[in-house]
Length: 164
Image (cartoon, rainbow, N blue to C red):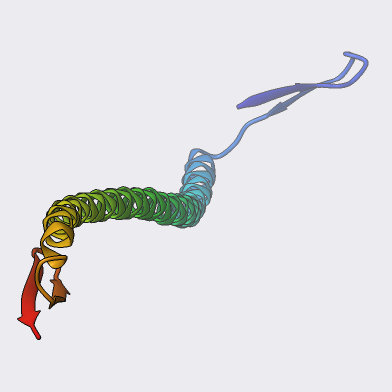
């Protein structure tokens, strides 16, 4: 049963409905609501799937960008390390070459000093022999013939006295 009032409030309309009809109407309304709920559930499920797909796409894109950035950083770091290593190698090579050059120069100076020292010894010996020979030359007629051999480690001097 329903009661309706007119807009001005003067007329009252009382409607008496059939119980079966109202039950049918209620069941029909429930079915409509269930269909609406089912459609809403299906749409919600579809929307959730679409949202999940989109979130997955965004996450994959973000991970791809992060992986690419990490790869770029790794490449840069490897290049930086190789440059540093190359500079260290170059510095070690320069230091080695400098030390080798210094050692060679020092060895050369020592060899030169030793040969010069031997040469000075032989020269002094020659001066002594010449001094004695000049005194002795007046008394005999002989010639001096000398031969000198210089090697890296030795200085040989050979003197022959030839009587004529």
